[in-house]
Amino acid sequence: MVMKKIIIITGCYLISLSPAFASYIRITKNGGPNGYNYTKTIVDKRGNTIIKCSKQGYEQALKYVNDTKQSEKELVDYAIEQISKGVLKGFYEKNGEKLTWISDTKEMINSTIKIK
Image 1 (tube, helix red, strand yellow):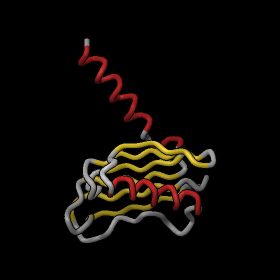
Image 2 (cartoon, rainbow, N blue to C red; image 1 turned 45 degrees about the vertical axis):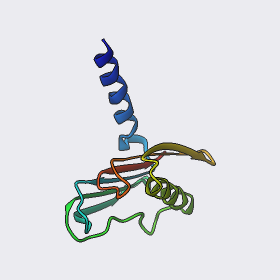
Image 3 (tube, rainbow, N blue to C red; image 1 turned 120 degrees about the horizontal axis):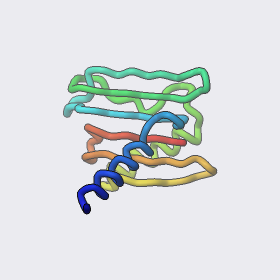
Image 4 (cartoon, rainbow, N blue to C red; image 1 turned 90 degrees about the vertical axis):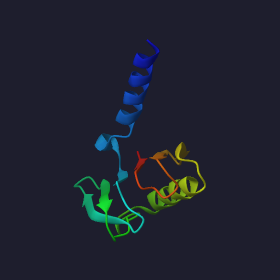
């Protein structure tokens, strides 16, 4: 019974990190000490930004693109600062924009930053 509750809670949290309704999402997966091999950036017709970085390589993960709003840049910088301080999971709201982040390490080898 306890295991079932943990699975349901974990599933709900992961769904909340999905990019479906995000205006900005940055995902890093399986990076290495020197960066990532694959980086993809998408800005859709509605202005939503998706940045995906994966696999070990030598490219640094983008924080944002030129079209990223200043308020979103500030929130991304805030999340990265918190992660670097060891706050690996969190939520922050500013001026109606909701920021969530999760990372496995301070180095953000596997992480997600999302703004709604």
